[in-house]
Length: 309
Ligand SMILES: C[S@@+](CC[C@H](N)C(=O)[O-])C[C@H]1O[C@@H](n2cnc3c(N)ncnc32)[C@H](O)[C@@H]1O
Image 1 (tube, protein in one colour):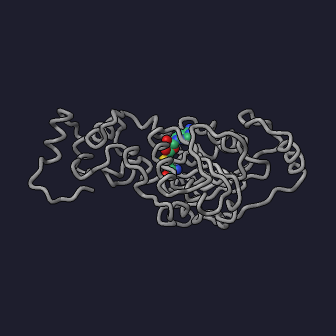
Image 2 (tube, rainbow, N blue to C red):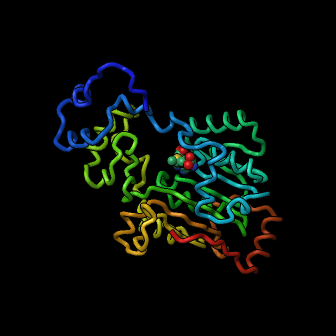
Image 3 (cartoon, rainbow, N blue to C red):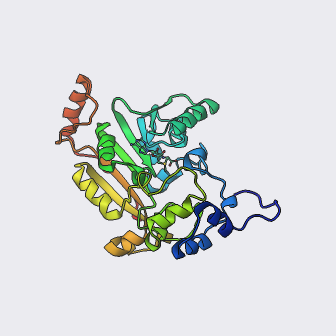
């Protein structure tokens, strides 16, 4: 937020009329619920790297929902899929992971991540657009609801695992959750995506973000709980656990399908490779890896405990 030390400023309705012309009733209502454009400093998510993270707090989202997370990554080769500005990947390397690769499609974020690794003099971490090889652990934080092809991306994460490896994925808010619209930076009100049309939301949003976006896609894939569950099924991955984080830790709602959509903020899943399935996206395995695959296939799988939502 900008400091409010300046003199009188143009009222937001006048600003909006100058930029957007005539406003519909819905647009006026949403604008009334919104902050003043001059109070919202961020022009785009990608220009405000790491707003919330530091290398010290970056692993908290995983530690909060996956007990023993730090032990699970210690000495391991770890992939951070959708690593954003690099905070988690760098924190993993500092927490004792043997080798960390952060994968990201945004060049701006890759630049930020590499610079951060340099500034913090962190060894054993690299950032790239495409990961090579196999990993003992794959993590992904708050990225699934942004993937253009989430099923493909989930398959890729699992395909990158060693046979006994695990994916730890936690993301949200989901689409029907109170802030699933991801517009809280200018209108901190719940369910705007259900109450206002996409056009209305994006016309008002254009007063705050000058990125030319007019629709939720491609930034948001409207991931619901139902979609995520069916995607886990159709992607053929092995689901070790799937738990939900609910609004204000409300009990029971996660078990009732309609309420679950409205009050589940976060999905937390531990996934593994389905060893009987041929995964077409897997990086080619070396002879040593193939031998290990064979041995692991004959062992019972380890279970990872995850608390209920
Ligand atoms: C909301 S950000 C989360 C970033 C980071 N994990 C964090 O929590 O700070 C989602 C990130 O996923 C990235 N992303 C989207 N699709 C991707 C893909 N197919 N492969 C890799 N990264 C992707 C976006 O560029 C964006 O940086």
